[in-house]
Image 1 (cartoon, rainbow, N blue to C red):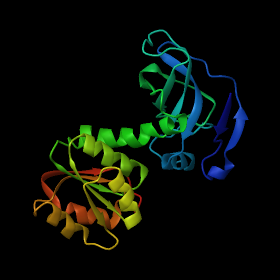
Image 2: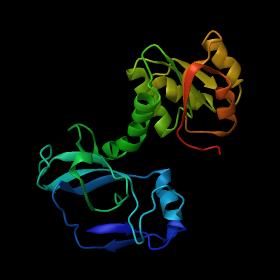
Image 3: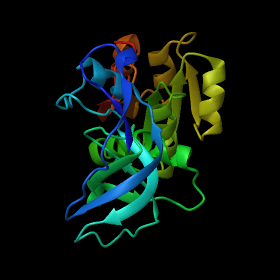
Length: 243
């Protein structure tokens, strides 16, 4: 198989492509031929040695993928060879032509979902759903503020929030970005490059504040939304794009 290799931590431009033996699969695992892999900010952090997951050198980066099952080990009953799948490879390895993963984390992909779309699904939508449903305990009828609402994980949070029955307030730094968030289901939009975020949030919630904040941005926007949180509100810190 062919794989992107990181020999030393630092500059991503030093990554190289190498031909390696096909990975060996064991019980409870699946071997997958990778058709597409997602490229994410954590890939860069991992190569620079700044990510919370630090594989031993040398390693192959890449955290999400779509592909086709080549074979499955004993105990893997929900997958069959030839089946289209997607997966979150939490320890990396997705920027390669093959990968072996625990069968439990490999999920069948819809037949009508193209491989590039399926490969971009696990991190953005998995992060949004886990944060909102499992950590934020977002309930139908509650208000949800999504900062950075036009980014990948932000748009996913807008869509997941709507599916969970929330009233979604999208915030971004331009009208064009907010048009994108609105097209994905946002009920209200705030341009925080031109509007006072705290004042608009309080106005939209009749002074009560928002129930859940989904924040992949950080910085000044975080400070403003914390001052507009509802009683027993929840703030989900997803990232730090602004520091």
